[in-house]
Image 1 (cartoon, protein in one colour):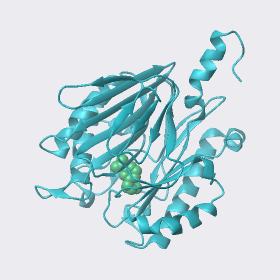
Image 2 (cartoon, rainbow, N blue to C red):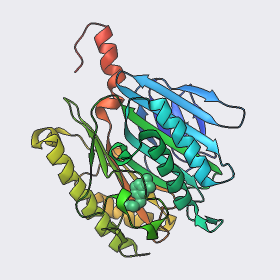
Image 3 (cartoon, rainbow, N blue to C red):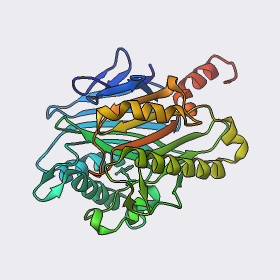
Length: 321
Ligand code: 3EB
């Protein structure tokens, strides 16, 4: 059974009978679910409260870890990423969604997001060694009220291209003022093919490495829109104009710090050329930098979420569409 993410649950849980991974992230507007995975995910509930889901469909990989917070967010992130990277083996990262507990709160003088970045970065370095940034993929990192770190990861045993935004400093090269270790992600990941897969990372009002229009929604939406536009341009270059033109409307997820900004965001979304209300949701989550109010991601998982349908068609002797 295909698996979707569902927003608006009271706490994190996997409902295998309906194929839904529920997140305790409030839904503010739009569609409550989003397709994640074409097939079955095996679920393991461990004695310490860890929930581990994993699946393989052809070249595609999925691993989900929801872990109770250990002594430090850095250690929790390090352990979770070490496990995920091991689970993926030779598969490349394609898209990682992170939900970090109390993301802007400080513990022992370090903001939880920065502690998360520290643990994540050390785990990537330990796994891949120098040059690990070539393995960073599209990602997002936002807050959650639950005292659990949740990491949802997709990978592929295929060539995955990682794209950057020429108007943004690569996150792995952010200066130290943003934390002791930089964020480990690329601005977009692409798998080319008859049906391409494309994930544009959580995108915010960041130019170079600086936050634009701190605390001001309209200004942040304008810059975020420009960054998304540039990433669409990068994706078009990577896929080629023809394949890019054939992409259907993307899944859109908006993370919003303040619920009261929902009407303004919905009005803005309606003006975006890529916007499809049937594939769009706005959720409440704190953003990794405390001055940021909004983060927006676009996903074209089509080949991935239809992989099962295609392989079933194959088994029954008809050509996949
Ligand atoms: C930024 O551009 C905004 O730490 O994985 C966006 C996407 C952001 C992913 C992450 C952080 C992450 O730096 C924040």
